[in-house]
Image: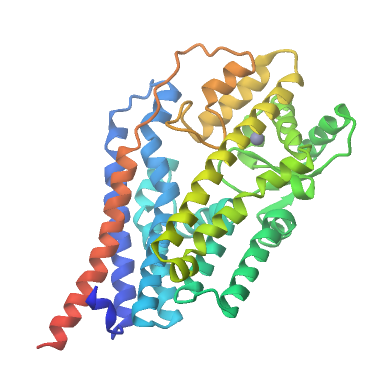
Length: 406
Ligand SMILES: [Zn+2]
C-alpha cells in the first residue's frame, strides 16, 4: 500500500472520482439485480414476485449503506497512513453515499413504478438510516476518530461520548429526535381511537400514538418511551379490525418486562466492541480484532433468538384480539405483500418468516411454502459497486503518480 504513504495532492479530484464511481457502481448493480425481474408475469403470485424482486429490494436498501461504510473504512486507512484532513475524508464518504443513491435512481423508479427524484431518494435513505441504524453510524464515526489511538485519555473520552449518545438515542432520545425531524407526527383520530381500544382491553394506560413518515407499510413500538407509530401506507391498506390486531402486537412489545428491555439493549455494547476495534488492535494486535468480532457474533446470535421469541409472543397476543385467526393473518399478509417482503428467507433474522408466523397463529395459507430467495445477485451487485469505488481511487493515485514522474 505504498500509495497510501504519500498525502493526497488533489483531494477534490478524489472526491469527484468517488462520486462518479459510486454512480456507475449503482447503475451496474441496479442492472444486475434487475435481470431476474424481467421474467415475471403480471399474474404471478405475490410470494413469487417478492422472491424474484428480493435482490432489487435488498440492493436498494443496502447499496448506499455499503458504499458509505466502505468509504469510511477506506478513509480510516487514509487517515492512518497519510494523515488526511477530516474535511477531505468526510467529503469522500458523502460522495460515496450520494453517488450510490444517484446510481440507483433508475432502479428505485422501476421499483415504485413512477419517477423517483433525487430529493425523495435522499429522504428515504436518510429516514432508513435514522430509524434503523443511526447508532451504527455514530459508532462508525467513533471508529474513524479512534484510528491511531491506543487506550489513552482521548480514546476513553471519544468512546464514552459515542456510547452515551447511542444509549440516549436508543432509549429515550429517539422519539424527540424523530419528532424534531418531522418524521413522527401525532396519529390520526382513527389510529388514536384504535390504540385506546387496545389499551382498554388490556386494562392499561394508552400509549402515545404517532404517524411515522416512512414509505413501507409498517408499525413500530418504542418501548422506552411507551409509544407506538403507524406508517400512512399501513393505515391505508388495513381495515380497523386488522389495525387493532397489528397495534396489539406492538402493544405487547411495550409491555415487555424490564429484563427483556435490557436484553434488547445488549446490541449496543456488542456493536461498541466491534467499532472500537482500532483501540483493541493497537493494544493487542490481531488478537484484539478477533476478540471484538467474536463478541459481536455471539451477541448477534443470542439477540436474534431473543428477538424472534418476543415476536412470536407478540403475535400470540395479536391473535387473541379476534376469535378468527384470519384477521391478524390477513393483516400480516397484506403488510408483507405491500412491502414485497419474501414469505420465507434464507437464514435467521429479527422476525420469524411470514409463512411460519401465519402457521403459528393458526392460519394455513392456501399456497405451499415458498422457496427462499437467492442472495447471489444482490451480493454480486454490491461487490461490483465496491469494486468501482476501489478502482476509482486506485486510478486517481496511479494517474497522480504518472503525472508526478513525467
Ligand atoms: Zn414485533
